[in-house]
Image (cartoon, rainbow, N blue to C red):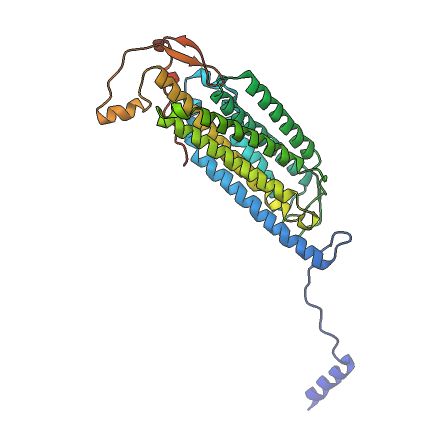
Length: 357
């Protein structure tokens, strides 16, 4: 058996078989001073934060689509007086600042990126714009129901300025560095934030609480007048509800932000929803404010609060003679009388806004 002997000789010359080659493994570079268990825990929280940011971004996008028709209606109206109101510009800024706040956050929470600090800066700019524009809308609403009171304007101006100063001061201290590639999530590593960071939410809570209290005071003072106008009463109550929801959300986030360092990885999960609620409530306050102005203009003109198109469709609409109507200033208060026939139809009535329930 020469072939068998040859095979045995070759096997003997080769010697015993060596150890099996190690399986393919992936190497993960751990942050300095962090164990593997700590890194795994950190990644688990990072996934939770990424999910919260993604959900917040989806909610902002959904709400944008819901109110898109109302936004387009603002652009297509011929009423120039509407664009003299700061609340209108704040509404437009708010619509897109919401994306500026949430979209870049996806890059430093969910995706691999080499521009972590840039994403953080853009996101913080968006958050500050959201806070500022929503605050302008809230102020505009309160000033409108107080008939352009200079005292109320002064109080709200001080509160708004203080709130913006707090948010800007905290936003300047957010930073992120580019870390090694990770198997999932983002490679961005957020730096420690200053211990007094919750002051930003505290300022928002103070602002929101004052707005709620001022609205409640006016609501109680006008209880007798509301018996004549159920529509005005409903508009007031809707705005009060929006204010309360925004205040309750910021109070909740402030409470979470005030927890000790053991909850440091839980705190970021609540932040995106504060932005979402602020955006959605402020947009509806603006639309309700515009609807309130339109109702008041129609009532001052001696017209029915309902739309002419609705009345004509039921066959009950009877045109009324032109009557003097008031011109409304940027805060929604009557400033002067002018003939109705010199006003644009949009000044008397812009198609009734669809207010989300």
